[in-house]
Length: 219
Image (cartoon, rainbow, N blue to C red; front, side, top):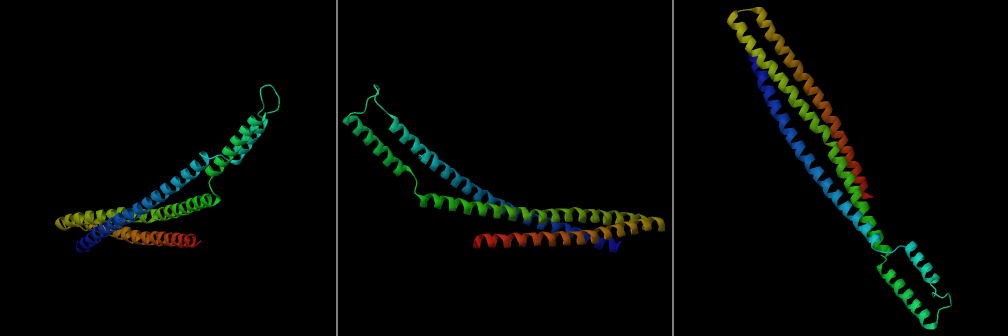
C-alpha cells in the first residue's frame, strides 16, 4: 500500500507537470499563429496594393490600343482632317500620353512593392512552419497527461484492493493489488519512454525549422 501510495503521488505530480507543459506549449503555439496571421495580413495588403496599382493605371496594351484608335479617327465624310482638327487630335494624344506616363508607376516603386510582398511571404511561411512544428510538442504533452492519469487510476484501484485484502487477510485479493501496481508501473515506464522520444523528435523538428528560418532571413 505504501508503494502504491508513492506511485499515486508520483503520477499526480507527473499529470500536473504534463498539463503545465501542455498549457505553456499551447500558449507558445498561439503566439506563433498570431505572428503568422500578422504576416499573412501584411502580405495580403501588399498584394492588394500591387493589384490596385495596376488596376488604376493603364498598361502598355491599353496605351497601344488607344494610339491605334487615335490614328484611325477620321472625319465622318472620309476626308482628311483640317488643320484645327489635326492639332486638336495631336493635343489630345499628347495630353493622354503624358497623363498615362504620370499615372504609370515607376519601375522602382513596383520593385519595392514586389520586394516587400516577397519578404512578407517568406515571413508568413516561416511563422507557419514554426507554429506547425509546435503541434508535436502539444500532442506529446497531451498524450503524457492522459497516460499518467491511467497509471494514477491503477494505483488508486490497487490501494483500494490492497485495503480489502488487508481486511480479509486474503492473498488472492492481495495478488490482484500487486497486479494493479505492476500495470501502473508499466504504464509509467511506457509513458516516460514514449514522451521522451516524442519530445526529442519534436524539438529536433523545431530546431530544423529555426535553422531554415535563419537561412531565409539572411538571404
